[in-house]
Length: 206
Image (cartoon, rainbow, N blue to C red; front, top):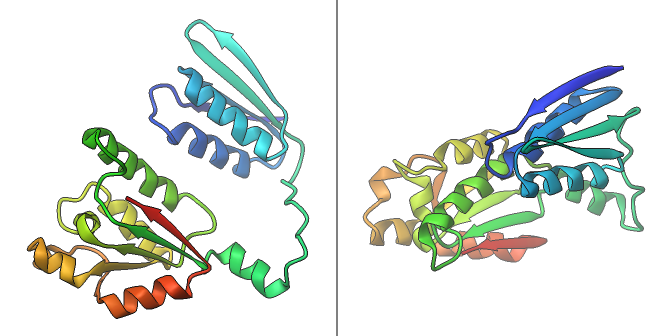
């Protein structure tokens, strides 16, 4: 039986989950053994396994936690609900979801933590399926699409995946950042409102 090992010690959230998920997907049948060094990562990896209906065993080795996930074959997707084929396809593609970002840091008042969470959010978004149709940046959120942003790489990855990256032109002007735009396109309020009203779901980050 094939066995893959993931050493996720010292990795920040959500990397232990992402790397474990990739190992599971790359495995036809066998075991994925993930080692982490904190209870939060342990619980998150265990939740991932359970969400995929895969058995997981957790052991303690010194200061580390070892999670052994067993995969016996192809992952079985949940049976579709009563929705139409068109709606199901839209959900799979993610074309109905728009992410609206109103700040360059998630939440307040811990701004430093907010920047860490923002970076983690966008990286996780690049690894998630389905991808959203668009990411709209307004107010302080436009700083994320300009030179020097810590999430530029993630936004460029999303753009390559077909996600539309739109930055509010008025916001860029106000913050004197228009000439520093490094990813995506400048947009206007009409287009932004049109995108938001046309979306099946809007996820707001502020």
